[in-house]
Figure (spheres, rainbow, N blue to C red):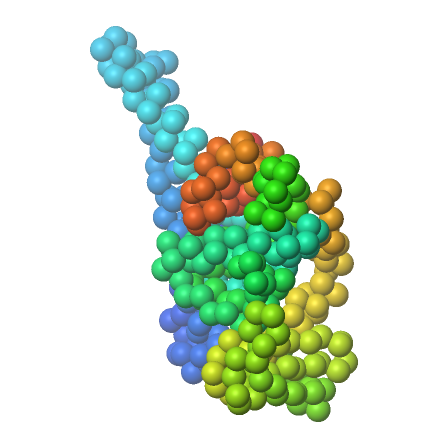
Length: 360
């Protein structure tokens, strides 16, 4: 389908939505109203750029006509000069429209739940898991997003066997979903006296936080236990049983939350993580193709499986999915990760454009 055909269809649907929003019956249906308002907002952006695109095409045709048929040489030169700028503007608008036409992930605007585990490499892997946790915390700070720890199993050297946390902010999932997978580090560990470079890995899982209406849980399916929160080395840091462990008996999923001093708050956080995991399981069942892709991204944590490598001797970060490298490792680990995320988003959008037949 030609780009102009897509624009015409969008303009037609935009007018339909406008008419529906004027229907008094819609105002009595809050869910329908919210749905239409959201759709109108997404369509409006395409309609606005589409109008500018159509105007540029009209001007290009006018200038071409002048170049071909005008007798006045000065007018022809002016038209030729205008054409250069118009052609550049046309290309820019075409790409902008194509990106707007790519269907959005319905989870993009949601908060995320992230799980980082030290994988292959022993204590060095746990230290790297800690580095990744700090990197995402710094990234969230740069974006003005909030971070809440759900469960953490720190090690004596400052790493993490496991850390589960939420990042709250508009569009958090749209950017952090690309972080799912095996992350590999190559450096001289603090535990290595001989100065040899070791390779270790940590796994990252990213789940969208889900609403209550999206996942229903039967209370009878839950086994809830409370215990005293523990610190590094296994010592109990609280005298009261504020930590919560929830077992979802049908699936065997286990969620632990011990970060809050309140048992109630820990239970609420644990339930949110459980809902996100159950939602993810259902999503994978509905779409086995996506399921296989996600499993291949997260992998087992083996050194040979990786989405990204952090090489300290070369000051290098390489994302293997897009074969893209930057040489500012310290900045990246300090949360300046947008350059690679932007490239990953562009790569995904380009693939979707190709599937839609509008890539070129």
